[in-house]
Length: 229
Image (cartoon, rainbow, N blue to C red; front, side):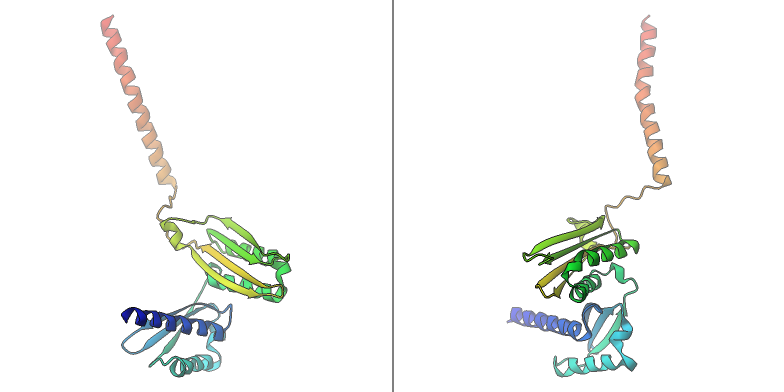
């Protein structure tokens, strides 16, 4: 019974998150988190367009709060807005923007849309980015296209800091899947090595010591030969 209750709880939570994303609009919301406190449920919405999400005098927030109470039976929901200062490093926002671009301009412009997004992310200072588009682009048969630039970890612990997201674009030829992976410059890489002046000086000292150690045995052998003579 406990397993069923946990599954139902997670399912309801997922339904709430998807409903919030759909009602506020694609391309405006990155993530939705729900925190449970003794006072009530705190719904945190991450967005790069807080003005559009809040509405005039908080009308959209009030509407969303009422829906969460009536439709989803939350006791005391409180909606909070978390602003994203650098949306170029948020994979979900970029994926949604690409999907909206494909729906608006059509799948024939997919290369222009992908390269523009790629350049925007790299110009902002990202360490690496990968964009994957799959679907009828532009032929009648489904195909996958990959656009990448910079350094991006695929496996290991460092791959966990890569921000990944998916989106779907509904175009006239068919559905197009969008996958975006971004490695932010603020990501902590455990295997990252920074070579600065101090490191170079240490390497030079170590190499000089190694050369001295190699030369010492040669001098000793020469002295032994002189004594024998």
